[in-house]
Amino acid sequence: MRSKQRETLKRKHVIVYTDGACSGNPGPGGWAAILLFGQHEKVLTGAENPTTNNRMELRAALEALRALKEPVRVSIHTDSAYLARAFNDGWIRNWQRNGWRNASKKPVENRDLWEGLIEAAAMHEVEWVKVKGHHNDEMNNRVDGLAVSAITSSH
Image (cartoon, rainbow, N blue to C red; front, side, top):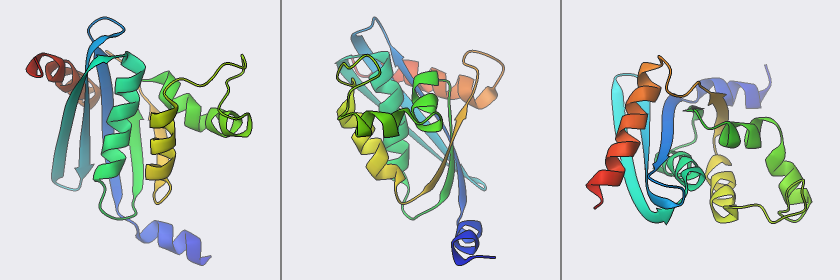
């Protein structure tokens, strides 16, 4: 087994659920992340106003990655197809190669958060898991409730 594979196997595995919410788009928004490691759980929430739903989805993942204290294997569960596909389908690499322009040649929105995510993910082995929103995934429903609550608790 190669040393990089051994190193990866030795890393702790953290499971993360993230979600963002917005009341109006743009409007007041909230984000939440739940980090799970063994029996440990850490809940993070925050709010911004004005903002958009996409910014809140990205902020939740960014803050979760920033909360990790050491390099880990991390599975980030999100109901945001935008976020999951950007990493899983190579959109990020294309945007960078094209000077942060999307397929329509327009500037990529939320570049600040995308660049933050790239930087925060660099030290980890990240798996982006797309989950179905507002379905029967208990943790996704819980993080959704926390994101919505973050909006109202910030006012």
